[in-house]
Image 1: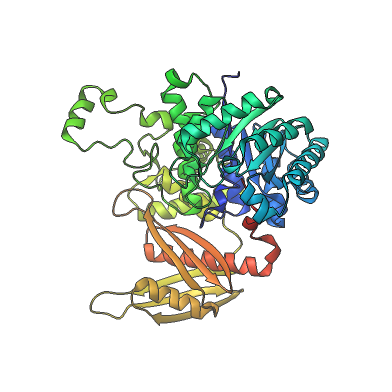
Image 2: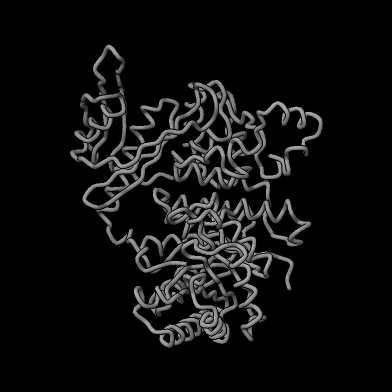
Amino acid sequence: MSDKVYIFDTTLRDGEQSPGATMNMGEKVRLARQLERLGVDIIEAGFPAASRGDFESVAQIAAAVKDCQVAGLCRSVQKDIDAAWGAVKGAAQPRIHTFIATSDIHMKFKLGKTREQVLEMTRDSVAYAAGLCPNVEFSAEDASRSEPDFLVQVVRTAIDAGAAVINIPDTVGYAQPQEYGELIAYLMAKVPNSHKAIFSVHCHNDLGLGVANTLAAIKAGARQAEVTLSGIGERAGNAALEEVIMALNVRKDYYNLETGINTSQIYPSCRLLSMIIGQPIPPYKAITGANAFAHESGIHQDGMLKNRQTYEIMTPDSIGKSSSDIVIGKHSGRHALKSKLDELGYRLTEEQLSQVFQAVKNLADKKKQVFMEDVEAVVLEEVYRIPDKFKLIYLSSMSGNMAIPTAALKMEVKGEEKLLSDFGVGPIDAVFNTIDRLVERKPRLTRYSVNAITGGTDAQGEVTVKLEENSITSVGRASDPDIIVASAKAYINALNRLAKKESDPKAEVDYLASGTP
């Protein structure tokens, strides 16, 4: 049995199904390149049949990534498989990932199919996919609640039809670690042709056991782990890449297994995801959280001073979480900025570099120190935004316990400059009310959050908003040293995304009802 575990990252597919984690095409390509830098073996880039936008994103990622396999997910129907192949065929190493539900509850109530029909669909879909691409993965959706002997039949059929990878997902996070490990071992022993395929696992975190189940399956013989950065994903999320990797790394004495992951890129990858989706890494998050390497107890601090290994089983440097050095200032040149951006893995055109350079200079005039996180926020703000239908020109606000909160804004609305002021119960409410009147819309604000990108009172504020109007939702993100300005930019960003979805409704289609592993 191989001593390597292949890392299949599904942040861009399953992860993006996490509420509020939507990304535009530029952000997806940027994250895919970072995953390549991280060293994952397979990137599941999306569900091409879901929408034209998803198809185009997968195709763009397939073209951009050279050192990883790129997979497209599809149901076990020919049109889905054709869409997946159409999107990934330009990849250096394409993969088709097809799936069908195998649990009795899913077959009866979701598919309306018998076991015999599911076996036939498995055989036909895998054989069709294998005729297009030699690298086919098959997933038995809701495998952990499927009858084991029927699962043996399904897996055998898929391998006979040409599947090179067999995924046994715990789709609803139902399994327990020992039971899940036993299921993997049972299948590998009972499926006659199991030696012809790599067994994979995809675990959800509904009971908080995603990582534990993944590791139990690996110990039992699975050699592919399907994971996401920071564990994002549907409902309670997926097994977290960083936790699985560091468990295998720290406990090599127990697992005796290797991966191709460059662990020093773990924290930069999770931080980039956090900045793209506008959701901060929780301080108590294992491996990457702000408190993961913090020691407040006096006894712990004393032990750490004597020998760090007394209370640290890994180091911040091992995951790329080194101190936030100052990277740029108002007297720094373009070459220094370009060098730092190259080091971070950003590939910018000369025009984009000039745009970022000027924005960083402007930021350096406002902040005493500009950190790596600030530069990344500027890149995401200036380079990876969608074209603006609505644009902020300037903003002025007034509030306090002796004044009525007031906001005055000048905006460009569909090419026309408009100026207006309005009131609110607070400064943010006043800003949002004014924007609504300027753009002549009244969306419902369903989420508003603020996070400091770095420490210090002059830290940039990173704001995320979620809007809903006419049953369409959109998420907006922005950063600025002034959180009121950041809030306005985020709100306008969400309005721009809302307008884009309205003008191109086919670009975004909810495909969750079709079921995924």
